[in-house]
Length: 84
Image: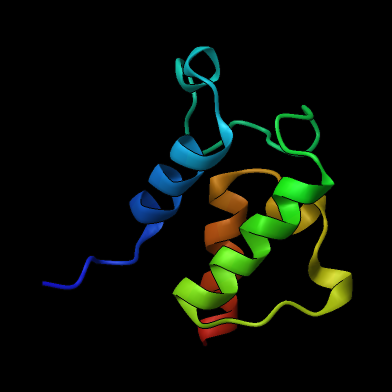
């Protein structure tokens, strides 16, 4: 059975790949990731690669920024806008 690729899927990936145990506590869909420096430039690139592959969307260079990647909610809105 294929896993549903939804906002929770994205949230779980970020928790697993980028957060320490102490960062997971209190983490939610609105937690700032880039502006709070939880994610650096390397982890941001890894995340963009994951989103492009798993959600079948393409980022243009100018879209790889805090406006689209600072929280799970912002990422999800970006993904939905690309799917339209």
